[in-house]
Image: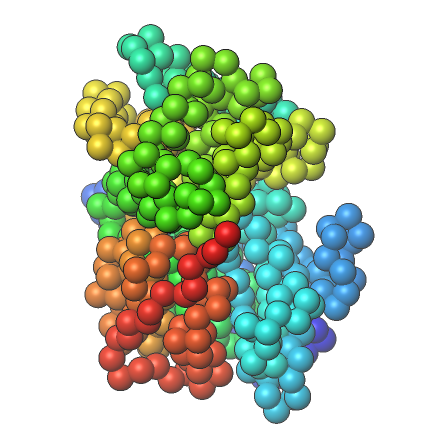
Length: 535
């Protein structure tokens, strides 16, 4: 995203200007199809939004991005540059209220002949910032050396996130305050207390950010992504999405199939309409329990180092004991069961945390309690970090609640989570309470997008580990079925979340080859796992 992205061929600029005029004129005329059935009204609304997205993209292509050195407080040093794009709050009203999205880039390091455009990144969430992505170039990470010669690495804060018209649901310092209620209920009264908190959180979202909530959908973020593509001066999008970023990519590929040039999706959200989002969260609970036990098996293997038990069962018993102790008297006055789950869940997410968490846990059991308490307790002095954490949770909730219609019956939530908890106690209730605001969500809930292959969509590269906790393997298989011509690279017997940023030549070389040449293997590929951590 240098001055190169601001270039405009005269014919292209004129063509864009004409398109804006024609589309805006069409939008002004009332349509008879808006009458009649609900299906007709929905189809008409989608058509208006599609035309509105074209208006916004044409406007962005003409304007480009004014790249500058990043503000000092953003902590994005040179050569990273920052800028803004403007998008409609509501794509059905492209000339109505606008919001600003923050973007950044590190320009490609290769020659002019090597450059292939911009590679846009989304790390997931929903609610995570992608602004750190260009640092992979700035810090000269060897894993991305070949790709960074061909592409400007572009990050952005999606709508509602960080500096992109951020939303909020509660005071950040209140949000991080600890200890919180034990997620695992002992009684009906405990469940009533959690339900009350969830409803109050939903109300807080309406009170603090109600004007944004109806528009905090993945479909709108996909349209924002197309506006960003246009502002960058790229005819087609090159995209890397991880975790929720895979669903954003899948929705983009459905809405704008002919606008995709290269797309890599890593650690895949199941795109089935039946899974978005209630069922997907239940699937997570099962997968987290499996991966937690993978880690505990590894801890037991190194019992001579950690002294937490020489079998997975013994290590799990230590976890149960630790949790019970924290419930009786929170460690340091701040680390109860909820905070322990928040800290320990990093191990099922990423095996890069395995040594760190096991070491702190081992020290705690041996009598040195401070490292574990410090790692698991909130830092109330970190005002900026706490603000980011609250904002991230607000966006997560807003997007998942707006994307789909959630069950409103408490009996269903209670029945499903009680059943799952019996065999998968680690995350089930904690996950339920996190999502329960969607049961009383005060804003419109939409129907999920039917992810499918559209005309002009090129091969999409899918990367997935078989034992991923946050996005179970079945999600990658489902997306692979839906996107014709896609290729699935499976990292077998591994479970880290986000594998394209890990050293595994079998995977890394194929990602490079695809991004640099567009070529994929003639069939799906299974890779051996990346190296397992050692203490």
